[in-house]
Structure formats: structure tokens, C-alpha cells
Image (cartoon, rainbow, N blue to C red; front, side):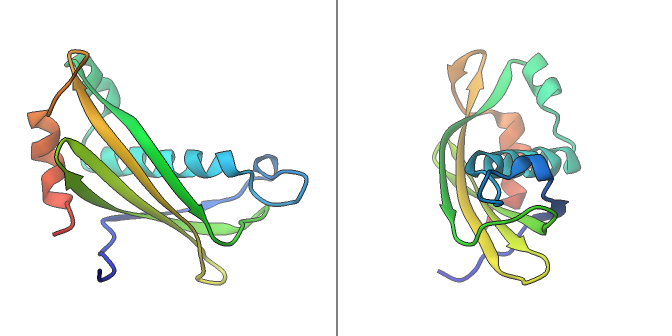
Length: 137
């Protein structure tokens, strides 16, 4: 499969307290980085979790798969990139983290989300309208 085109990118920096005794980023923090990136992407296209929730629409994580390649360390700057795929009722956010200094892929993740409408698993026409234009073809 050819490399997809990223639809959103942002740069972040590792903070000291995100590292463990080995001096590398604790594995749980990668989920925080990816979540922050997804939220920033959605905000950049005008979607707000608070607004959606007030309409009875909640996007929830159903599965996360993370492949750790090269650890990030304190003060490393990294680029967090994502592309989007749609499979049935699932939205799959493919998220890659790159060390800015080396250009190396440090982490590759797939975050699968589904939508609850009025607390029932369902398709949200509002999310479909806003997200489908960004799906990798």
C-alpha cells in the first residue's frame, strides 16, 4: 500500500515528567500525544466534542494499536501526523510520530473510534459530513 498523505500534522516536545527511569517516554504518554493530535485536528475543521456531546453524539475509542519503533527522550521535538480511514461504522486514525531532529519514525499507531448517538452505537450524519472529505482514498 502506498504511503498515505497526512491530513494533519503538529509539532510537540517531550516534557521531563513524561519519561520513566530509563530516560525514555513512558509508553502511556504516546496515547496522550495521539489523543491531543486527534482533538487538535477535529478542532481545526470546526468539530467540538462538547458541541457534539450536547447533540447526543459521542465519538469513543474502541481499539488502540501502537507500534513503538525508536523511543523519544526528554526534550525531543516530534512531529505528530495523521491520516483517516473509514471502514463501516469505524473511523480509523492512523497516527505516526517522527523525531524532528532525525526524521525517524518513532511510533506508529492506529486508533479505531466508533460513534454513539444518544448512547446507542450508530452512524452520525454530522460526523460523516465533516470527516468523509478527509478520508484517504
